[in-house]
Amino acid sequence: MALMTPQEYIESLRKLNTRVYMFGEKIENWVDHPMIRPSINCVAMTYALAQDPQYAELMTVKSSLTGHTINRFTHLHQSTEDLMNKVKMQRLLGQKTASCFQRCVGMDAFNSVFSTTYEIDEKYGTHYHENFKKFLTYVQDNDLTVDGAMTDPKGDRSKAPSQQADPDMYVHVVERRPDGIVVCGAKCHQTGSINSHWHIFMPTISMGEADKDWAVSFACPTDAEGMYMIYGRQSCDTRKMEEDASIDVGNAKFGGQEALVVLDHVFIPNEYIFLNGEYEFAGMIVERFAGYHRQSYGGCKVGVGDTLIGAAALAAEYNGVEKASAVKDKLIEMTHLNETLFCCGIACSAQGFKTKAGNYQIDLLLANVCKQNVTRFPYEIVRLAEDIAGGLMVTMPSQVDFHSDMVVGRNGETIGQICNKFFAAREGVSTENRQRIMRFIENLCLGAAAVGYRTESMHGAGSPQAQRIMIARQGNIQGKKQLAKDIAGIVD
Image (cartoon, rainbow, N blue to C red; front, side):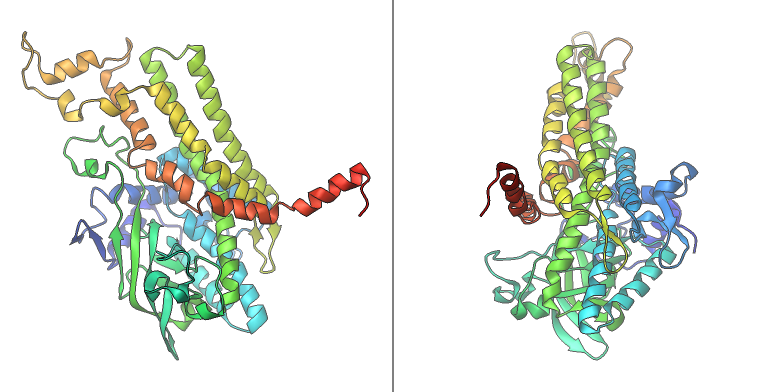
């Protein structure tokens, strides 16, 4: 099958019986729902760019499994060049959408599960690796979007999965049958879950022998019986449902999406199982997925940062202060921080290495340094953008007011005329364009897109302390001490 077009992708979602709930109600036509559709448009962009010849090198690649041309989002990395092209592709999509385009988690799950299943089979003689290769071949041939589901609710985080008062706090096996397993539990904060054709479920922490029933990884279709989604709220999200609010939304076409994914006695056939009780490999999947996903943030967050820097520069221009040295310096600092994140994403890719299974993994230390910087730099970029934009981005009257014909002025001025008069930009710039750029900055800094650019930068792919733990493990302090001893002439 050829690469899907954006239109084919959207139509393919309509064929699914995905169960979506929002505001206490089941959403029947979720594909066209105004709060959900912008996130679908983001995923559609991953298909659109793959159809564009000028982006073919970044967006498409030859499959290592079939030799066919596939979307890079379904690819197993075969070189450090592949790893770097992944980061460049993610930056491009961030630039095109200024939002989360949602296919990264699936791509990172493919590569971590592929290499881990190889090593499980090597030790136990299982068939997980073949299961996964067949599944991924199907995904590649049909150009499917797959969600990578890792984050469990966790309950009491001081306790292991098997010690929880409610065993469903971590996804687990409740029944084993000759032809498969039955699973229960949930995954939280699932980016792009509703917009995906399939899901790959993975453990979220390292586990011990008592946690064998929770050491499970598998794939299942998004509309599997017993599986449903409860849509997560975002800041300012109901603006998308207002009439005449295309400017107030800030980014009318694109947006992100998160959901609670619930598994209520879902049956998983043997052919889609990739881990089933081999608890000592749970941590390997987590560590490898986290590494790939922390690399990802050196691409996607940088692309979104590019749009925010551009918006801040436009706001300065519209306000007539673009030549002020203080403004120029702030834009320089924003660019410096953004490019530093990109450097980290490229560096951990360039230092990648081949796994036993044959695909390439990033340098874990540098990937964790990348994500540690992501927990900080976007917040400073946002602060500087807000500084340049000014208070208007959060106090401006609604779009409806700018178009209102209600007369309130002594000389017969309407509310719309008054708003357009007092919120005018510099000469030659329309008030509407100033509105648009202010609302766009608001959207990224504290509106719906702030979920993906701010809070996700903090907690996505693991909160800051998770990276610090990995940096401590990978930092080789003992080796550095020996370097100092050698030069100082210290002999133990």
